[in-house]
Length: 120
Image (tube, rainbow, N blue to C red; front, top):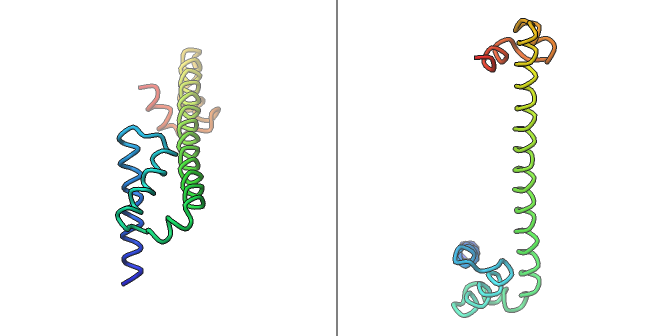
């Protein structure tokens, strides 16, 4: 039963951080306040009181990694979009120059269906 209590307490602790972030607190402030709030309410009190610095460091690192992953995903989406726009323009240019959809597909390593979809 102790493991279930720990898991429940951990989820309450993380929920507290998320709530404070949603209220506009900065990440470091939210973690500090969540630690204080949880210690007061006897949620992970033994761990948080004894290892406050380590917990805070771990959480700040974890959240920063998530932000970095999100930023990388967004950058990838933007790059993919830009490449798609360039390819679409190039396909239209080739088509205006008299190339057939089959020739365009072969030159760009695309399926004929994809070329026809872009040209529609």
